[in-house]
Image 1 (tube, rainbow over the protein chains, first blue to last red):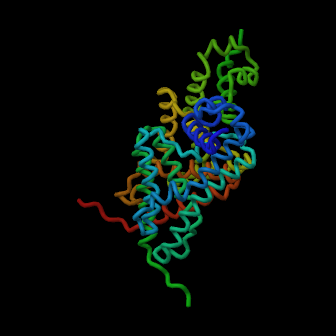
Image 2: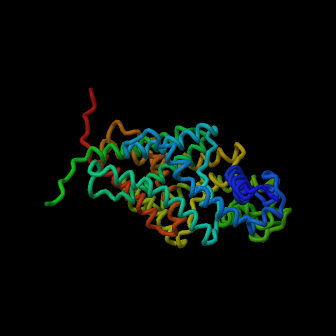
Image 3: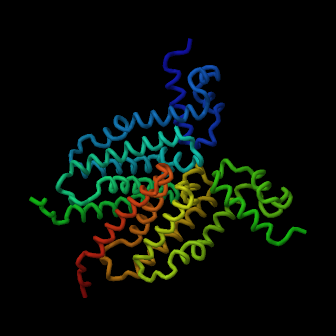
Length: 202
Length: 202
């Protein structure tokens, strides 16, 4: 009998290897070896590498709240500061990995050149959950932000700031490239927050 | 005797395949077949796949002016509009590829997980040439932009906007994700251009 957590161990091993080496460079044999399971166990739970990728992407998606947002937002009540606290968490990941950090979702989105529809849908689910969290912060900021501001657009722009900043920090091996992007986003927010508000008609 | 353009044909074939399939998924055999050359010809010019990647990255770098900036900027004199004309060129690439477009440099920067120093240096050369071109536009905008604005930071932020917008458009298969990011960047510029200028202190 396999212990009941075999499936989870296989998923977490695949998650780690896809992140460290990339999806294409990781074989099922690599996963079996690193997880210490035999192929019968793996194929009992998963049809193959793509099924594992789907499970990895579901695990990331399920973790956005408890693994990413909740730790980033602990003790931070201001909704605008929550956005910058989330970005600061990525900064910490960059520093902690000697600037080799890559966002796992962003890396898979560019690495996998012709994703099958279920894979692409799960990449979308991850991006959409991330931007929805930003959009909730922007909604909570209420009248501090201009009424005419498109909060959905801005949430995507925040995601681009993170993804582009991570990509540049990783390439230059310098967190300063990420910091530069976040400083500019902060200046944009400062301008939005300082803009005189037009009172709602009637 | 090989015709004199064999080396270039090999490079352009590798460039196309790395872009379409990714670096890891492209074999030397794929390149030989697509270029219609034998392995003796390829190894006469290149030690292997990494040497080919270096040549591909040099070719992208050499093409930034003639292949990217000059077409994007034809007939556009305003330095701020040049920045948005460059982004509009990426938009066209997204639309022309049914939203499968990926920036070749950004994709390689995330796909290759442990780039050897010469590869990483050539990725840097490409990003730096791109941001230097943006920074020149920002310098040419002169006093229309705030004196205290860090133009180097803003150039990196523009690159993040492009890379993050391309990544999202590719994932959602929707150019609207790219457009959302560019609209936000435009609003940031509008705010910077509208800011009252502080006269230089003597």
